[in-house]
Amino acid sequence: MSSRKLSTPKAEETRRRILQAALGLFQEKGFAETTIREIAREASVATGAAYYYFPSKEAIVMAFYAQTQEEMQELTRKPMAEESDLRARLKAILDLKFEQLRPYQKALGAVFASAADPASPISPFGDQTQAIRDQSIRIFREALEGSDVKVPSDLADHLPRLLWLYHMGLVLFWIHDRSPRQKRTERLMNRSLDLIVRLLRVSRFRILAPLRKAGVELLRSVEE
Amino acid sequence: MSSRKLSTPKAEETRRRILQAALGLFQEKGFAETTIREIAREASVATGAAYYYFPSKEAIVMAFYAQTQEEMQELTRKPMAEESDLRARLKAILDLKFEQLRPYQKALGAVFASAADPASPISPFGDQTQAIRDQSIRIFREALEGSDVKVPSDLADHLPRLLWLYHMGLVLFWIHDRSPRQKRTERLMNRSLDLIVRLLRVSRFRILAPLRKAGVELLRSVEE
DNA sequence: GCCAATTTTTGAACGCGATCAAAAAACTAC
DNA sequence: GTAGTTTTTTGATCGCGTTCAAAAATTGGC
Image (cartoon, rainbow over all chains, first blue to last red; front, side):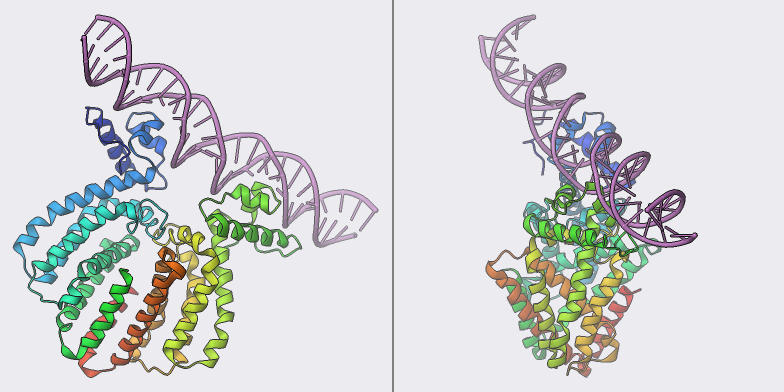
């Protein structure tokens, strides 16, 4: 994440200035179009200073990940305490997420671009993002555990990860969504939530047990 | 794709030399580590020549897409004529795909990296790759139509796209798969194929009709 | 075969992300 | 306060992808 063991003098302020300048510019012009030189200029430091605090341009995005994930942890606390219906709990998480990411929609296109490259340091699936990812998955675990839906235990083990993956897919769709006010994402979210909750409810039926078992086997084989 | 309206003198040969040099180097060292200067040197042309034939480094990858897709069209002809079991037909397609891509596994990481960026010209989901994508989806349509499985027509409309998406997911998994001889991908492929075929077989059951309908609604909302 | 028009090839130049030796500032112990 | 050490900042420098004006090669009409 950061290249420094945050030695926390007042010059830690510089780091914040650089991060803030970067996010502002990412928001304004996107990730690829923002140059390190601009970021540094905006933050009133020399070009090299950005590299003193962040090992790369992409690492700045990592810092952004971490920051938004911490915010999410806070933001979801209230709805998780107030609501017990699973659909409502999941919708609350997703709504908060999109509200939080909205200003960065354009910038995130380029960020997600690294999603699929195992070599990229900012891949949401890579080693370097594991801590942040785990924290994000935990939110879905809590959403499940505090809800009224009872899921077969073999399936329940995999559900938080699966829901996290689902939410990443939604974010990916949202990034591409050029419809007015992202109505298509809204529709997809509502319909997919319906389907998910219905699938979970029928997942306990005896007739579907062999199918469910095949599904769980599949999930197990993915998780090594 | 190509920047030239392939004026087809013998200097079209140059284009082939550049593409071949690029693919060789991508295979050897990966996409990001291969420089345009190297490609040009390997092809015995000046740096700028590469840009005369390909608008960018990424466009070379696009040409690679197109070429492999044409090969796939050829390669799948035989198994599609010989086999009628759906699972076997799908497995044949996937096996051929992985066999074809194996030499480029490392290079493809970087290629797929653009998958998620709507702005990237080489995103497999973007406008510029539509022709190639459609051709790829057609292979799955043929695999379905020539098979023995009967699928409800509302679902059948969406299946080729869905199977294409599934196959992209598998390729993505395969790129990340560092297990010996990609055994994990092999396992995931077999189990997911089992599940898909089973799901298709039960998709006609009356009891599941409402669930299926919800699923089809979901698919429809994605496809605008 | 010749010359004008066109296509192809060249390599210097640009701004980029990133690096690093050295300068400046901040901190520590006395 | 001062000297020595560490942290922070600087900007010149590197090789990269990409651009482009100009040179070279090719083509087509006569």
